[in-house]
Image (cartoon, rainbow, N blue to C red; front, side):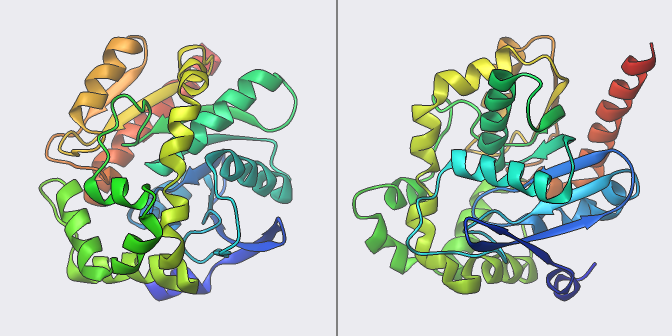
Length: 292
């Protein structure tokens, strides 16, 4: 699918009086994709054909991201984004799904897991979750200088200095051996700037505080989860790379942790075939366990 076709295929649903873009395709078990910061669901496009050939794939752009509304006077939070995804599922009449998540979406999934644990059998049910690189544990998260500046008291001022070159620099620092092309940077930047989205970066980055404030609750949600969990990691990521994967292996010895050598922060963009292979094996193991 081309970048232009992707935008043209967007559908929309209302959330808190704002329009949220989403994409659905495929048949089979429902699979909810949750993207990262600062990009959007387009992040998954290199895996789209494989995923939609096996699942009913559901991919919204969160509020403040991609082709969704980006209101200036809005309190952006991980908790609100989790409720957005639950409202999205309710809009489609889907009561349960598997989750596949990355970066910012990792925290959204943790909030959803915590809420899922607390409410029991009520509401939206999570069947499994596979995590790509992201700040699962704030004590391990190595925020980049640009993130620290945006999250500071002068973040709204620094926000004005961000441009395509600064985005390119940041992405080249967090990718592994395979760097994004100029065309890919153009696409990422157009998603960021759509609907004047660059102006709210300093508000979206507050998710770092949400992670700190919910650290214990979200960590327990992982430790006490009764559903299948998987962790796929690009170890060259300076933010949440090998150090995170090794910590997950220590903290969750019974969970699958896969390290993709040579890969950085965006495994599904850098090595989509390897990520698909790992995820397919994970899902197949779930299906085998159901009948054994």
